[in-house]
Length: 189
Image: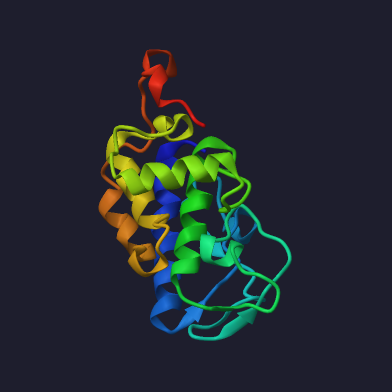
């Protein structure tokens, strides 16, 4: 998706999530299929499919699968475990969907240790050096990498809110520098 069009969508999605979260609701199914573009220029966006929506603080049971937009605390559940719902789950999914919209692919298959792309992202985030991004994240401007760190904070308690994304709207999100000029030492695992 072109960045200017995406930047018309993002505030609308963030506002819908903020509205829900302020009323104690967690959507639980933020994914590309549940974001409806009502016009070709992205001036009117709708969030859809509230079938999994539950009250914040509700426990939900383990499911034996994970998806690219599931947060790490969801992906690490074991049989018999339950997940306490919190808006940060939607914020994580929002960050993954944003990456997908920018580049046409998910940043990883799942937020699990066995996924090399997630593992590379996690190490980069722990290292806290915006300039030393794994290769997949070098396509994002250094200024916007912090946005993804806020949305995709591994520690759910420190994850930003959906509406926090508005402070990044004025920044360029895609890095316009060719990948050929990038430092080869910053490759993915």
